[in-house]
Image 1 (cartoon, rainbow, N blue to C red):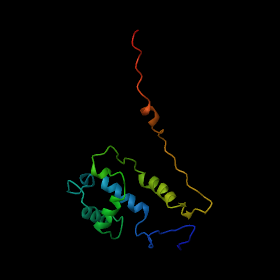
Image 2: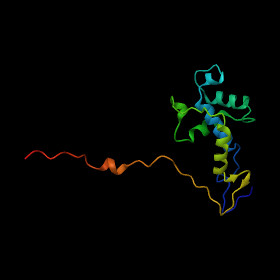
Image 3: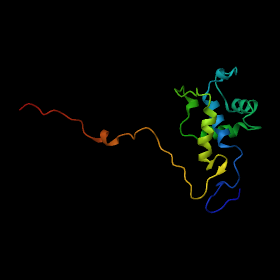
Image 4: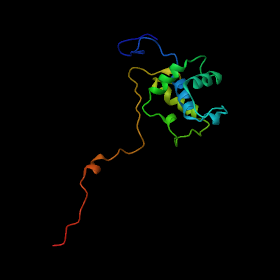
Length: 143
């Protein structure tokens, strides 16, 4: 893949070593308790995650420092807290890879054209900051 002005594929100057799906799998593994994967640990460390990612066949090799950078890149860090988000869907990887492929500008294995766009929307309604700025209502005092 060549870099062009219209589509700078690699802003850092070198191609990424890990696919978006591999990065998502590492993050998903970090969100699970080690005991859920039959790993005799109470918490994950970056070297433990790297070892487990290689053992599972997610990546051929990955240093702990790369795991640390992958996890540090996210704003939300569910692996640092007990979370209510649990991946229970057995088809999660298939569904997630479709979305991640769109983020990578591919659909059914084919790159999107320059005139094709991905539009993403949130199903949650926007918060209402105006309501918070409205002064509270106080009934009139009896005259």
